[in-house]
Length: 135
Image 1: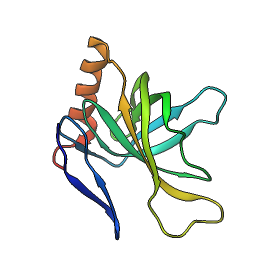
Image 2: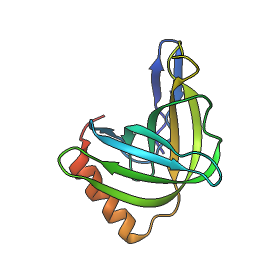
Image 3: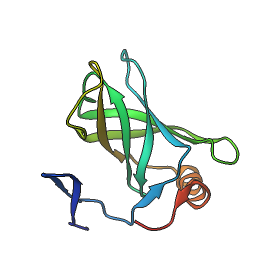
């Protein structure tokens, strides 16, 4: 397991717990967090690995830590998406000091649940086609 210290912004750091290499999201790569009986949250992919993803989004409140679903899609080049992946929200933090009206820019870290063989193949293809190699 990797344990690196990741600077989020001035005076804010996180300890990296991902077990596999992270890849930086390209412009046009997005994720949708879905929880029963709550509005969906759409955000830009910051980075992704075979085990999870981090997303930047605008919201009035943080994502509740716990289980949900996520859809991943990209609009850079041609539209492609991965449907309904079980996941768990691990953390959610505000990443800007100032909010815009009552909205704040937030960063949410999500760990994927057990992926099927098809989902693993789709995720690998998504990373190859829509994500920047190094991070």
